[in-house]
Image (cartoon, rainbow, N blue to C red):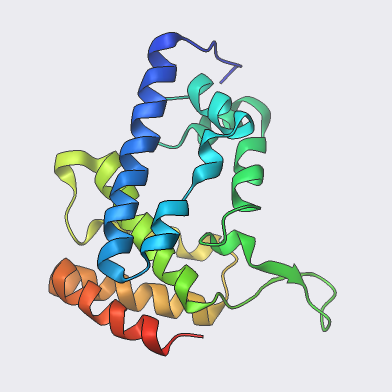
Length: 184
């Protein structure tokens, strides 16, 4: 994919999509008992570094960062985003003292909860009427062999997504509120 033009329509559609997503995350975070995290969620998407790439590569069915990757082989917008938002497991990597290589670090529970809220919201926004409570778990499982995530973090997220698939939102958010209280 080559570099795309920014149009007024794509700019509007991108703004609408990220705002709709953000509002869904805020709603989920409120249900999870992390309201302030919800209010601060993904504000970097409105920064020029991320917003204009999103407008340029807006497609409506997948992240614009994929379009930037198609054009350049990498996404500067994604690197900017993951470096500023602690609810992404990619933020939680560091050099290991043992291996002297990049390794995943365990995420604090409050950010795993926000990541869960984000994944559910993204599935709802991108899948629209095709969304089911199994959708976020299916997405997680399809990509699980291709990510560098700490095993402890992956287990917590997988458990939450499985609970959502099996018991629904009401039960899962009820459990998350108790998990938050015991979190580190």
